[in-house]
Image 1 (cartoon, rainbow, N blue to C red):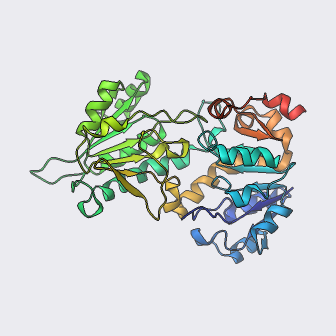
Image 2: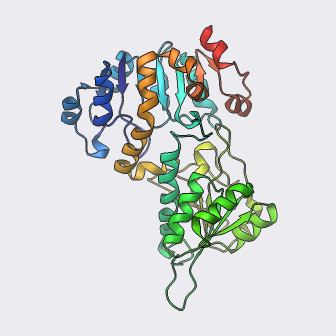
Image 3: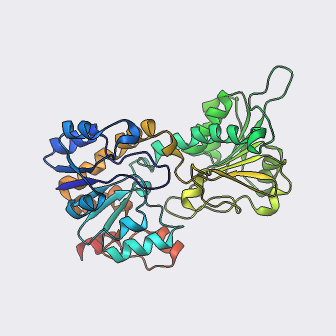
Length: 371
């Protein structure tokens, strides 16, 4: 199979779908790899590094899309990209379709077979291709929130760790999954007063054991959310329903009870955001203010640290990517975890949460592939 990797074109996106090390693995499996010139510049990998790994360098993205049987990316295809996709071609990348009807329509019309990193599963019920970027985004959420909290950036002017004689800042993390765990770890490491809210008592017990009492845990109710948001300097939205749009847990009305200059960091923004007042921002203009509350809603947070992110992502995606390249659609048919990852095939939606969120009829994966 000919595997293609175009350069990412989303605002301030410096990650790359294939590192030179991953290219070597595809080559070792007998595949051809074509990489757009400059695709790895954001992680310090020039065209010569890709040539040395065995790739062919394409002068344009159009050449990659035209020649490749399988496209490996990082972020969802942009309008200029999805019109270049075609039936019979595999797309392997993050998609986040539930809050994005326009992209969904574009993929349906293209006829492409699209496997979304964020819905591929594993034997433990986890999301192994989403996890590494959730780890990065969770840790970055505290760095970003702490920066936005500075007075010159519109925030309250609070140092998260405090100093002797002055109380530390308060951080509320909504959601105790991978993002929430890593956000809490970073915030606690800075010396902040941290509370994690979640609706799973077993998970709260697990988090209590992990942190050994250094972080508070609290069962999430409307009352608990209000109390924690009202007292927090930073609120991190870390809620995930796989494949589906994120629930709006913090309403605009609740902003009036928060401290002026407090910061909301919405890590769920790829799935539509879990704050009612959230809308996607970019690294060029990461924050905005609503009712005196600073919002940080960058939709590709890990793109800020592409060297770390690209290698972490490739470590996770390589295994399934090689399966797809080696066996094509048969890999999806035979592997339930890749079947969970399939979102679109030949103009049909094959993922239940996406279909429900956007009002499409869902087609069973096995029936779709058999047809």
